[in-house]
Structures are given as structure tokens and as C-alpha cells.
Image (tube, rainbow over all chains, first blue to last red; front, side):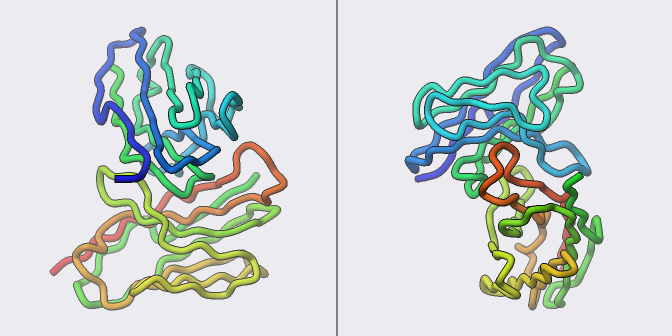
Length: 108
Length: 115
């Protein structure tokens, strides 16, 4: 099925551990985005990539890094996870019109 | 600061009833306003998209209205069904000329439809 695919769906990390969230889209969209969603708050933009080879910071980039590996894939990396990064992470493409199903991350 | 406020935060209605969700925004400049439906454990799915020149847009039993002068939008759900139970998110897009953070998300209204 066409769309945005995120992996993993769930993850528990210990404080200080690192991990990479993967995102891939098969719709040939140029732009891709990473958001986090916290209870009672709107989605907030972490990083985005307007096109292959470019990335830019969003509203809440601290503690994260991204890589636009190719046109299809856009990964989000937590180098040293903190409890404040416990959240649900969504990848989106095409200016936020298409979202993945999310990664629920818990940092203990 | 660009903001999108939604009300109510949560709502419970009986199956078959109608309901209206509200969205007020202060985003400027304004490109378009979207309503998304987010089922539990899933990503948001776009329901309607309206530019500043559009007053209403329908998608089946969902009808969105927009008053760009007062910066208010509403989403009306007709003859609710159990499957309408979800969070509904209002999203305002900045002018395309602004790069970066293109979308400002509201906190959502959590709707529960009971039999």
C-alpha cells in the first residue's frame, strides 16, 4: 500500500541510550517531516527536509538529529535519550498531508 | 505567536446525533486550514482543506466552515457513527512563502460516540 511507513511502532529506551526512528514514503514526495505529539498539545515539528539532501530545524530540534538518506527515506536519531523525549513520533510527507502511523517511544 | 485553539477539548455524544467542533486561530499569514481525524494509535488523516477564499467544504458527513475575517473554523459531523470516535485536529498552514514550520496544529478535540 502506498503511504508513509514508520518503524518501529513501539520502543522503550533507558536514559542515555541511542536509537534511530526510520521513515520511508513511496509517493515520490519531495518534502518529509518529523513531528512529536504529546498529550494535550498539538503536533510539534522537530525537523524537516524540503528535498533530498537538505534538512532544517523545526520548532523543537534539541536532542535530535536527522538524515535524508534519499528521496524515500528520512530518519530521526536520538543520540542520548532523555525522559523528556517520551512521546509519540510521526513522520509525514508532502507538507504534512500524509502521516505515518507513529512510533510510541518511552524513555525510562 | 501563531496559535490554534480548539474547543471543546472532549465531547461525548450519542450515535446518530450531530455535533460541531470549533477552531480559532491567530496564524498569519494564512494559506489554508485543514481538519484531520486521528484514530487512537494512528496518524492523522486529512478530512478537508480550505483556502482563505473558501467558506465551506464537505467530505461525506463532515462539513467544515471557515470565516477568515474572524479567524474561526468549525467542523460539523452529521448523523454520527461509532467510527467517528477519534480526535479531530485543526491545522493552519502558513503562507507558502514562509519556509520552515509550515503547519500550526491545534491540540485537538477528542470525540466519543456512544451507542
